[in-house]
Image (cartoon, rainbow, N blue to C red; front, side, top):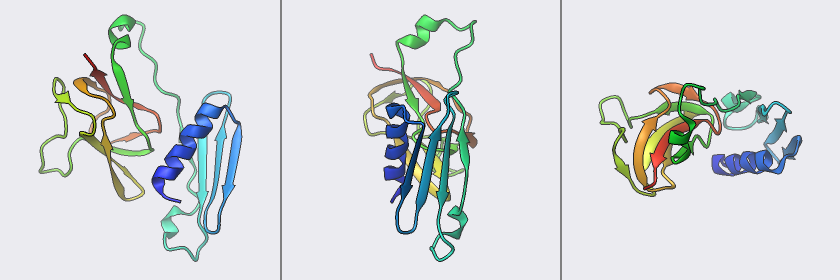
Length: 158
């Protein structure tokens, strides 16, 4: 089972409202639990014989998405599209330290443009835009840890 399939499974479970899902295959056991406080726990276990020993039993908890502060005008953010993290990992705004940023505030983006990289378990995943528009706000600092479904960018689609 690859990372994309796991991400899709997590999204499906989150939308379905199920409390717990267990999936067991030959070399992988995944348990996804969702609590009443919107907390998601993922446990992935790989036997010692597997090629990736660092992936053995890594529990990861996802916090609920932060809400807007009362001082911020809610109507300004409501017209924007929020691009969220599809995975848990470390957020990077550049492909490498000596390269330019993928995107900046005020930059126009198209569907399929790479917005950032999220490193998860030593794999660097390019996060592409699913919408076209203008970057209004970048909500995460470079080299910061991000959670699944955490808002990363605000995009003005107009």
